[in-house]
Structures are given as C-alpha cells and as structure tokens.
Length: 428
Image 1 (cartoon, helix red, strand yellow):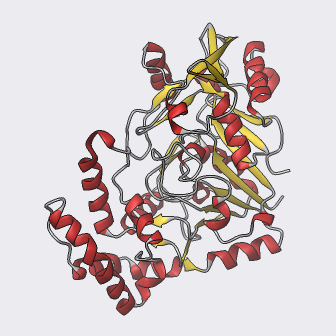
Image 2: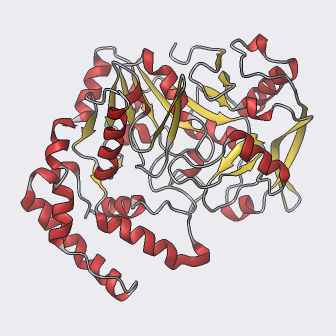
Image 3: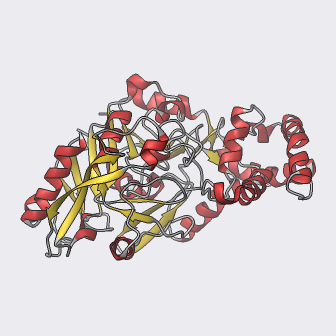
C-alpha cells in the first residue's frame, strides 16, 4: 500500500497532524501538497506538544523524509522560524525537501491580504492575513514567484517588477498605502536563498521514484474538504485544493498511484472564519465543546465555532474524496453527555435533504435534523481497544460509521500519540 492520502473531512482542525504522525513510523515520505502557514497541526508526543504550521507532520518522525510539494505556498521566514524552533528541541530537520516549483509568499502578498480583508468589512472571508490567497491569485495570474526563481536574480527581479506595477497602484490608490519597492522585495526573498538551496529538489521526480521502489508515501492535506476552493462552502474557503485530488496536482504524482484515502473527522464539528455551519451551537453546549475540546486555532489562536456531528458533511466528504477509511477523533470530548445529537439530514424550507444541497443559498438556510444517541460517563482516555469503550460509546461510533458512508478505522480518545484505538489497518 505505497501511496496514502490523509485529508480533513470537515472544515479543518480534525486532527490530521496526529493521524499523520501516528503513521509516521511506517512510512518513508510525508508530503504536504497544498496550503501554507494558514493552518496548523498539533502533535503530542509523550509530554511534548508540537505546533506545526507550514511543515509536514512527518518532520517529527525519525527516518521519514518530509516534503513540501509544488502545491504549497511558502513563507520563507515562517519556514526557517519553524525549523529553528524544532532544532532547539532536538528534532532532526535535515531531511526536509522543498519543491523547486512551489510558490513563495512575497511580503507584498501579506500586505494585500490584510488590507483587502479589512476593506471588505461585513463581507470578510475570514482569512488569516498571511498572504496565502494573494499568492495563489498570483500563481493563477502567472505573476507568481517560485522557489526556483530565487536562483536567477535577473528573472526574480523582472517578475517582481511586473507584479508590482499593478499591486502598487492598488496599494496607493485604493488602500492609501505606500508603494512597495522592487529592491526591498528582492532583498527580503534573497536573504533566505542560500539556506534554502540544499533543500530544493524536483520533488515530483523524488516521489515517483520512491513509489517505483515500493516505498510508502503519505500525502497530507492542509485545511479540509469543506474549505476546498472547488468543493467547499465557496466563497468561505481556502485558496487551494484541500481534497484528495489535490494530492496529485500538488505533488506531481498521477491519480493511478493513490492506493488509499483516509479522511479525518471529529466526533463533533468545528470551523473557523466566516460561512454557513448548519449544526453550529451558539449556547452553553457550544461553549462546552469549545472548552473541553480545546477548540482554539493552532496558528491563529482564534476560537473555533462548534457544533454537533454532521453526517451530511461526512457523506459528502466520502464521495468527493473517494474515502476508503475514516479516523474519528476527539471522542473523549463527548464524555459526560446524557444524549449526543447527530445531524442526519437537513430541512430547507420544509424539504428534507439527505445529501448536500446543490446551491449555497439552500445550504446557508439548512436546519439540521437530529437523532439523539445515548451518552456515556466513563473516562475513555485509557481505552486502547474498541471493547474497552463503554457500550454507548461503541454504539455511537458504529452509528456514525453506518450513516457516514465510510468505515471508521481508528478512534481518537485523547491528544497523545498513543491515545488511539485501531479498528482496521490504515496502510494495509
């Protein structure tokens, strides 16, 4: 089973980092194929907690080669800040590879991201202000800066000059901000080029070679299905392909090479930023999930919006990604509830929807239809087999599996690396 994709099956923050980390001892490469430092993973190893923003989770696994693929946008300052921090904690980061075709976040992209979001006012998307969207826009507009451009200063300067012709007009005349000079941008990017160069590689060639040799490659998505630019709750989405298909375009491997697609999903639902969220709880129960689950962003610190498990979203993610397995996380957060509601369908103006509404307006007005399952009170954080769980917790997992369209192969019962119940082998 050489090629496995791990994706978020909701709006992100499902625990993909932990799922990837748990598989790390059994894989040879871990590839981040989309996004940038606009989302983070938390990985707990023993008493140590690691917050990763740009780096693949596999960087914490000895012997694994972590790869930043061509579909990622790279903030070089953040990259080296993370690497330096991990090195001070004794983590070997020497194996990291960065695609020569990955796009670089220029300083002016961060500036434009922040001022544009403020300018939108009530129509804000809820971006992190880290320049991700503007960098992807530059990529599509063919005025982007790629890693390989840092090693030809003439080309780099020409590209920056071309990009700034329009951007400075926008900064000056629309946002009343100072113009950005070509020299300051070139200097800011070249400051990192010497240190970056040993990591730069044709990662598509590397990864295809690894698959040819039968090595195991794990592809790790940033963000999640419902934030995918094509299949998410547009326009309240990220700027990249966060679904399984993005693993191919974002890393340079063909779709026939993918063997398994693992979706990571919480035992309830969260999201950050703006946009519709049918099961959102704006009451004490929402606050209970937020506090008990520690629902605050790894990268931004923002409070996450919380709600009950949404099987409509789960079925949608299963279909869009072609999921073979689900990893259910944070089951322990639900301990102590007498009844646990689960959304099984939507009501939109008196019409029942068992699948995602085709248009955004209907989804925005969707009212969840709930089933209520019996809860449990026992501490499940020490459970290591499915049979260790209380009967009602077992029934909850089995019911979610039945209504979600994909088998649940692992269940998370705590934040630690070992706090996971394996039901099926994710790699076999």
